[in-house]
Length: 494
Image (cartoon, rainbow, N blue to C red; front, side, top):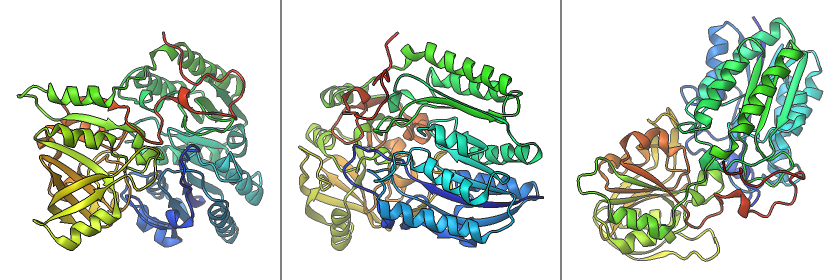
């Protein structure tokens, strides 16, 4: 039986987004727990589709002893402030120091965190942890599918284990895989590591593992891992980070350096060969409205319009209004839009009450250039307190804390509003305020890909819309300054 210290510190950083993540953003809960410490951490993550939950469950099943440290995450945004990063990192290191005598440390990280003073914030955290525990204590971390994996991260950890799905339906399963890797390392320390960055960026919407080429590359990574590595992963990267490590990487660790290198080289080569399949398919707002108007009367399931560039799961604020205004102007019966982040509008709806009508200036309060509120008279259809449990594959078990919520109507268009921003990736977010997504004719979602896990099965068709927002879908349009020479901003077409 091993004694394992367990902690987590997650942030996905869009360095092009204007709003930083301070300590308050890590403290408050959303779909996932806020900053939790000690034994409270185990209860807070239990039953949620989170790596830490999967790791702890697997460790306990194997009879290991858990020493909980702290766990926190914040919604994707601009850089993490120096003060927030240092506050959390220092406390995490202090708690590791207090848990003397541990055989191993496991960290639930994202892998694409950038702080105001650190391009590779995850790598620096791993470096500090390694310095604190020494070379003989095993150090394993789980990473997000969108991790920008730097050499320092691979050097400091004995194993890094990344998700293999987007939508991320395997987060808890990845935590369990991390425990399996740790068990292997405790029996026999790793002696070899690999890090193979690919020479191009993958657009987020092209990274979906429900379609090719990732649909087959991820199982291929798993197959190559078996028999040749403790861990072998391909992360497509988070392409909205202006850091040298931005982009896809093949990485891993193991006992046999030659076997590990052969497998890593094969995965690298196959990913490079399939570069031309990474198509970026976006439609304009005008084309989206035309598609909604042309929807067959007997269509089974809604037409889903993914408002990807304002996805709060990638640094957006869920409050741009260009697509929403077009839908209101089109006045197509059965249209539902959400989830719009506007605490003032939600509060006004609660003050008036269900059944009332009121004037609102909805959305566009985050200051994105060119965006203005949707103004007019709205009817309040339903209210909610924002507390509910996620039911879909991605947010499964998540105990949402979105503050006061409302469902309002602007003509035939219904709009779901929340007081905390959260990407629309779970049908429970709509059902909480009395809306059944499957009954909609047109469904606008502030999300990029995660919605497909829960909404995909009910959809007639999905269109990814290029409407305004800070989550720029085409990396070729971003003003990078730190990428290494030769890194292509978009995949070459086949």
